[in-house]
Image (tube, rainbow, N blue to C red; front, side, top):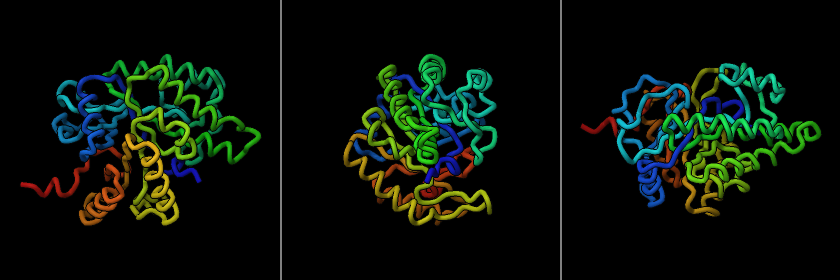
Length: 292
């Protein structure tokens, strides 16, 4: 089941390794608790980010954090590798190249990308990533890469080779940009093949998510929760240096519910963040707000 097509609609960020990023990664490697967040707007003050070490932002619409947030931050810029939304500035060019496939029925206005086409790899390596890095990001947040195995499983004949192409793309990015920090969103089918090329893995909607039909937050379904609960510790065991982050969605007004999610995810050995599904506000951990 491809959970990302439904839940994983917000995107994340890009990078150049600088002193601030080095300090943040050092903190992650030491086993210390890492505070992190995803924020897709440009309204928040830089002061609101000071307590966070890893910050995921939209790569085109974000607060001007450098250099005001100081050292010890890793800023990641969002990059969708498996599909392109029609409001992206390069959408028309990609469409003209006939690299796009059908529209994602779960996210109107966003189209799957044929990862097997070398022109997409070239665009990612030569244009999209350099453009993000020039804005001062320390790394990239890769989204929608689990589209590839989903499509290949759905229609093996039509999409044969998509999964292998996704793996090749991640490896090509790491080869071209060895110093950047990379966080991968889900993409569990290819994770064993690319876990050496990434620095951080994100489990989205592991414990709690948002029901777009009823417009309510809810605890995650039991089977997907158990599945992710097995996958994430397994990869962490295979590669101890890989940091595991989780992003769950919940109503911030339910302080007890938010606290429960943080407690659960930390007990699993993960670095959690709990947010609203829009990801357009900074939701602080409840115990932080209770401090005088």
